Image (cartoon, rainbow, N blue to C red; front, side, top):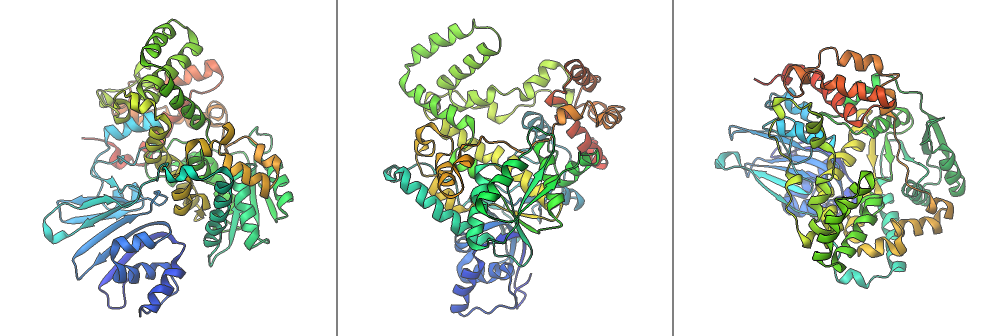
Length: 563
């Protein structure tokens, strides 16, 4: 969209949820509008307040590029948490290209050759982090960041972060549990109300868990006729249709169960098409299928994503909180002696004990060194010469007693800049947008994170309960049974299907693997893993990761070869 005088232009992906409030402020200041869109609010807001004040006042998920003809300046902006993606490349200091996917950059001839470090990251994580792109020369604008570029200045773009996730403060320690629950309820209602503003059909996703139940409860306070959708996988251990139906009954809301048919091999193609970079998160297949069956009934879908991440809903959060406390109490020489003894304990039990003691002595670096990831492929002897000597930055974090004593804090910092934005958020946005479905999560609201992020960890884990604040709120507003349910993600059993219903596609991929031909893997590496899967009756997760990468390489064969 261009401004009325053609001097300011914007390209925008996402939604500014509070755009009506911003528009009212601008109209009072004399600005005139030609449309009813949040896009035009970005143009007029920029003219009134400048880029930083505009972003500060904007509440939503967004990636946008703005050009100011009078100042000869381009701006790229990404939302605080990184819900919406932003790729960019600068060619010869003269051309700035940007887009929402790596595929767009490649199609515009802005992408270089495949980056071996990004391939190594994929084998480590099953995704490529925001610190890299699968293509050399292409970058991802970090979450909560602004890029400024003046093409006539001869200088490189300037990039800075305008927002980071808050951490516990002394003032927030004065908040008691009751106040935390009450404030969270208020913020949830406010966040949901903003996200219900749409000129297309809106629905909400309901699983059997706490977070989606709370979102559906809040939705019902504003629109009790809005339908909640549940995707059923009959006969599957992870099927939550029954639990969701119970929740919908307690809430008294319209509920529609959509049965998911057994996934065919075409789902593998959709995984490659939905994500521009290789993406091996198997639950992404579930998100793609959920979006496919819901799309005919809604265009905007409210979800419960993000609640676990800020209110501490994962088992690792509890473990690392306990480890932090232990590291503060146990003297270093005692930990050293215990570690020496643990070296003599055999099997899985010994490994778990050694890992825990490493966390207590070394901090967050030990957490990432404990992952199987890339080293396992090296141990199996299947990595090819293209990956020889490629390192991983998170495995090089130095040991630190200070980090050990603040293990949960440091883990959250790393996860929020890596897995949270590059896997969790990418999975939902990519899977939903593949079927033109816009996923909006009230728990990703900046006000929610600015409040909850400052709360002491022990308050969020009140009485040893994971995401205690949300569970207490669900006890009061939904039902005690919902509050006590264990977290259960939507999964597709790829380790079983690779050996059975997807076996013909696997055999076809292994007939002439690009990864082996081009030196990423040693010849026979794929077959070695498939044989191990046949022996165990279940494919190793590493085989799924490699097959995902192979399929991606084939889909981009024209640029996969590295000279």
